[in-house]
Length: 66
Image (cartoon, helix red, strand yellow):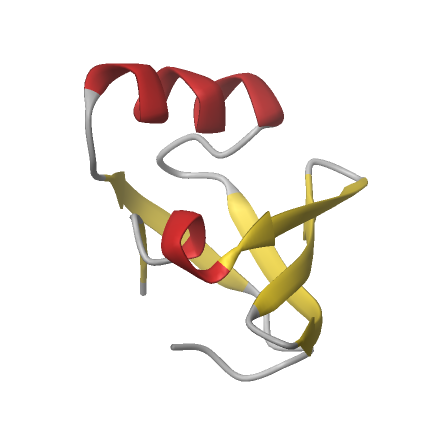
């Protein structure tokens, strides 16, 4: 897991093909930057490509960052 407010670079998107495609359509692509804005009850709000996106913790666990 990452710290809130800290920018991270996406390394890899895991999971099934349809999950990867869904996340890529939201802007989660390898080499892109993502930052967690807040975490409430297991759900996260993240900044990706100048947009805020809400995703569940299970979906967030498929995004590998460094």
